[in-house]
Length: 55
Image (cartoon, rainbow, N blue to C red; front, side, top):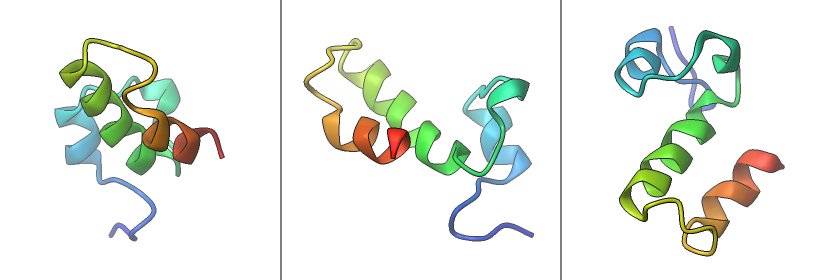
């Protein structure tokens, strides 16, 4: 049972989120990591996702 603010175990496993980071913010971390991989970790490319995760 997942809410809109948490990712399911299957989603976290598919996104390879480390066990220590699997918390309520994992639903924000997954899109951030996807953006980082697509843009080769260029810091100015994923600002919206990063600010949402850090908030």
